[in-house]
Image 1: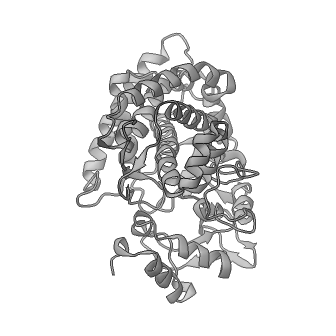
Image 2 (image 1 turned 180 degrees about the horizontal axis):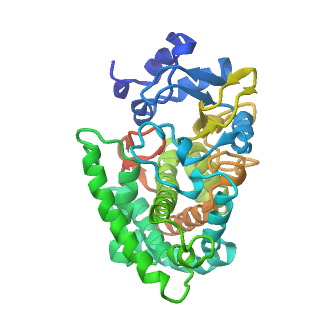
Image 3 (image 1 turned 60 degrees about the vertical axis):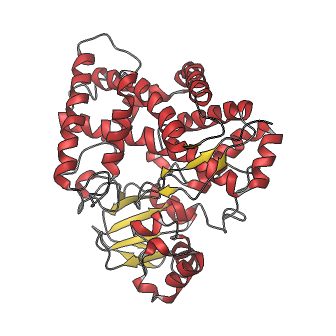
Length: 421
């Protein structure tokens, strides 16, 4: 049976009918069908540190409970992010034809100095300066939407707002914003017939254009006066201005994907979650002050990046299991966010939770998402502007989800905004 055709009961049967040792949650088709939940439910209950011997990504360990994920994520001495050891995705080291250096895929001390170079771009004072511009753009996007007609929320709203913000962060021309979004999608797309990229050669060809564009942007910045954008910060910081071109491009890839996927897919995820939970949508309309809490709950419930991967630097006994040096260890954030030992009623979407920021979507420790506050800011502003304008945004049909075990997101989402009576 095709995974894409599984309903919830069939997905549950598929997850529980297999021998435990054969369970493999790292199947992109499971995520595309939103059918992976029973796999993680079973692993959390029966084998929270689980070894899959055979998968399309090779053998790997699954870490599925909240506190175990935190333990791995904060122990960078034992669990490495180094791109030369496989990096941060389950496919790294095997599917990666030529791994790119980037600070998220580095260990200290190099990680720390490179992260520090770009952190000012998303510091509180920088966000305060960006907020009016984000609000103006959000208002413009929403005011341009067709009322009473079906349209794709992902394309017209989620992509557009994040693309505008990304172009600003890079100080790239706004007319190029959709190029940047496209390149971000190409980075995480698996080559497949009918997909965004069909072959590895096609992906490499697109990467050449991507690389050339940002090389030109670097060259325009490196001999100019320092500016408060990400490229200028990298070009002028003493620890990064002399980095190798591949290392610069790797960090561009990181900042592009990081600035695109989390925010974009949570904006779309908020529409989906509120439509699937109309009582919560009503509560939000009646209590707009709940927007910040709703944003945090959506980030947990959606979990826009499903996993991060580490590689064991040494043999370690972890929760009764023997993890060997060189083993691939996958922290399933998407599972940790549904751990009922930490989060009460975790499968429910509750916008006024007592502790809405208690989630693992941004990671923990030194690799915690550098742009998490910017993501929250964009989500807060777009919803403040939505509630000012529209009685509701109505989901027309089930969205089309991304084919990926890494990016947990939406390719398209058809909605309609009803005309006011």
